Length: 184
Image 1 (tube, one colour):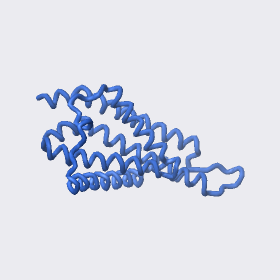
Image 2: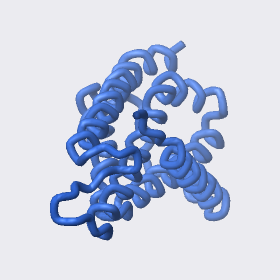
Image 3: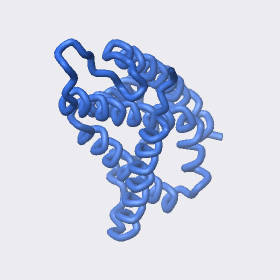
């Protein structure tokens, strides 16, 4: 039986869109320029980008163990910052430069982080069932699709492997391809 993560993915997208909007509004309202250390002229090494994004993705997914507060918090924090960054970069460098800086690696990174967020929301649902349902002594907790805990953990691990592969591709593009595009 396939697991439908549509609702969880929808929640991740809505939280992210809300955060992006808030970030843009904050930037427009307070007119605070980006700090100098956030204006990256040379991208960091691929390993650093991959490790940073992987730790965010792991936090997004495992945040579900704490009833989703961490997952939602990370989605909001990152998307508010990104919205603010977008708004400031468009103002200072134009839409085309933001397009060049984000789209090539973003087509892999953004879906990966949204998937990690949806996994975190699914883990939240599982955690609630684990703590608040009352099966009989010999009955095992099952997820919505009737999977055992082992099946659910396997499902999570499979999704997180996909997330990590997408993040690796994104980090490669961000480190090696994006600088070439910027210099054109």
